[in-house]
Amino acid sequence: MGKLFSRYKYKHVMYGKSSQMDFEHGSDAQNESTDFTNINTVRQLEQVHSEPVTCVVHVDSGVCLSGSKDQTLVLYNYENGKRKQTWLGHEKEVTKVAYGSHIKSYFSGSRDKNINMWQIDSVDPVLQFKGHDLIISGLAINSVDLYDMFEEEVGNSKYQTQSEYCLDVDNSQMCSGSRDNSLRLWCLSTGECLRQNSVTRNLVTHVNWAEDSDIIAQTGEDKEVKIWDARTLAVVQRFARKQHIQSWCDISEDKMYCLTCSNGFQGNGCEATIVCVKLQHGSSCPSDDLQSWRRNKSSRNNSVLVLMFFV
Image (cartoon, rainbow, N blue to C red; front, side, top):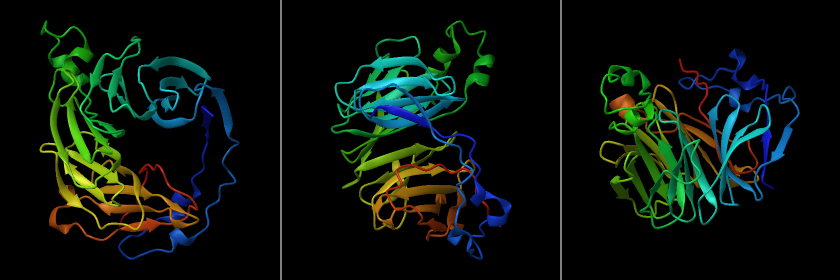
């Protein structure tokens, strides 16, 4: 209840050279058993929330941001076990959290339908984003690194800090998703909704904005994975509908592939799938799944695309 856990020093046997996966010619690597005996004992951290944790996101080395049913956000250093900051500003439970590395700001979505923006020295939200009709179920920040660009503007007296500059450029935007079937694009300097688009029965479960690109991946309870173009906030690619609700997605660094995962029960569903992003591949993009894994016996609620082997 409200506790964070840390697993460290993983040894990912299944991603070694001996189990590289050849998606063109097929492989039996996904059928091999995985050795988890080298994972160290789980270390239980101090209780930082009074109710269950609903979402966690990585912020920096040894630091994470968590949201909870107790309506709070906690910035926590899990290496030294110290709480760095706690924020309280929602009327209902926190459902999604995100971190904007280029503006050093923290974001939270809630069942109260609102999104709050926080900074390390703030007690109250520095900005609120209002417009969704139902629970916030997806948050993604356009993580363009703009600090180098600031150096070119250092002589411009309009900007006193790097954060002020980053908040004033067009690329500082946030994409949010909701159970109201819509995605919205927000300006991080004003809180203004720049664009919005709805798709019937598209109850959003997660959104992921590929770094330094216009590609947004989104999963939903309609069992589909969609690719959106951030420039127009239009759906540009849909993947074949799966048998189970798609709960999470992540995009590879080269923006070529998208990893999704689904819910399920007792091994039925509970799968992770890699698909091809057409915006990067063009007409050569295959329409079928490139690879699927079905090892879990319960829902996969998150996944991260770390390494991929293609020949």
